[in-house]
Length: 494
Image 1 (cartoon, rainbow, N blue to C red):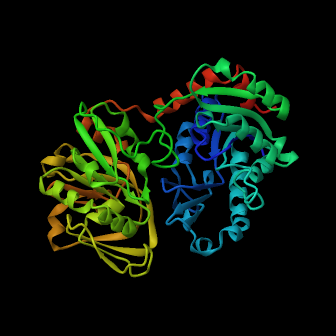
Image 2 (cartoon, rainbow, N blue to C red; image 1 turned 180 degrees about the horizontal axis):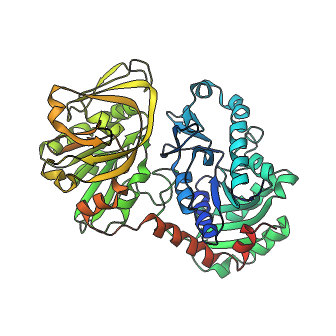
Image 3 (cartoon, rainbow, N blue to C red; image 1 turned 60 degrees about the vertical axis):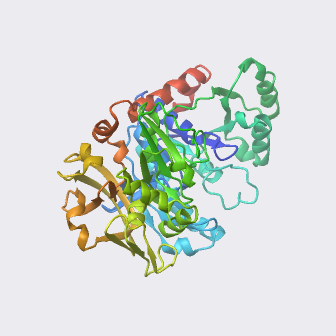
C-alpha cells in the first residue's frame, strides 16, 4: 500500500458522511494529491454507469460517482464494489463489481457478508496501491452490536488499512454528544484507537454555547472535536438517502413566482432521483415530489422517474389515484415525461415472463405511448450518446436535433407497437431507438437529461451550478470550518 487512508464514519444514517467524503475528496485533490473514494458496500437505488472489469460497464452508487468526480478521478466499479439496490422492505438486488449477482441476491443476509468482503478487500487494496489518498465512507453506524460481527463496511475496512477515522454526527437532531460518546464506547479498544476526531454537523446557533461539551467529551474519550459545521441546506449535492433525507421535500408549497412547476412522481421504489438535482437550483423552476393527486393540480410538467420495481410502483401509482390526473394532463397537451421505468409505465403493457420485476406476468400500462415492455433476465447497463429527432412537437421543440450523453440502467426491453414507428423521438449513437413520443408525452430510456447543460438551457435558461462549482464550494466550506491545519495533517502521509 502506498496511499494514506482516511475514513468518514457516522453515528447514524443521514449524519452527513456522503457530502463530507465528497468535500474531502475535492479538498485533497486541490492540494495536488491523487485521490480515490471508496465505500465497501452501499445501499441505494441511485446508481451510475462506470467503467467495469474486463471491458464491461458496471454500476456503482451515485455518491461514489460524485466523489470520484470531486477527486478528479475516473469513476470505476472498485470505488463501490458492493451495491445493494432495495426491491422491497426485506430484499435487495446485489451488485458486485458492477454486475448483478443472482447467487448473492438469493443468499441470506448474514451469510453473504463473508463472500462479499473478499471483493471489497481486493478493490480497496488496488486503490490504495494506485493513489496518494483514499477517502473511505462508512455506512449507517459502526457500533451496531447486532451487526458488528458481519459488518465489513465500517470497522473491518478501517482496520484493514489502519484508516484515520472521523466520526460525524447530526447535532440538529439532538443528543449529539451522547451519540458520539456512545458510538465510541460501543467499539472494542483497537477500533476506538482508530477514531481520531469528532465532527458536529448541521449546527444552528452560537457555537460558543457548545462549551464545555467538546472538552468534556475529549476528556472522556481522548478524541478531539475537529469541526463544528453550520447548517447548510443549499450545498448542491444530491442527498444519498432519498426523499426523506436532508432538505428533500416530499410535499413542497408551490412557488407561484417560478415560471415552471415540475411535479416528479415519488413512488416507493423511485431510483436515480439525483438526476433532478439541477432543477432544484433553477430560479425559473419549482420542483415538487408528488404522492397524491392534489400534488399535480398546479403542475406544468409531470415527470415519471426511474423505478427499481416498475410494476409494483405502477400499481402504487394507480392505488394513489395518480393515473387519471396524469392522463388528463396529457390530454390537455401539457408535457408528461417518463424516464426509464417511467417510460415503461407510459406504454400500453408490461410483461414479466421470467419474474424479474415482481412476478406479475402482464399488466396494462398508462396507455399514453404505443410501446410494450418485456422484462428480461439480463440487465442493460451502459453509457449512451443520443440525439433528439428533428420533428418534435411543440412541448419538446426546444430539444429537437440536440445531442447529449447519458446512461442506461434497466431490466426491461421496450418494443414499439405499429403506431409507434413515426413516434421515435430519441436515437442512440448506434441507431437504436431510446425514446418515443406521442403528442405532449415523451418517454426516454436514458438517464441524465437534466445534467446536460444544452438541454437545460434550451428549456429553462441558465442558472444551475456546474458540478465543479458544487465540489469547490464543499471544499471551501470544510476549509473554513475545520480547525486550522487539521485537513493538511489528515491528508498528508507521515
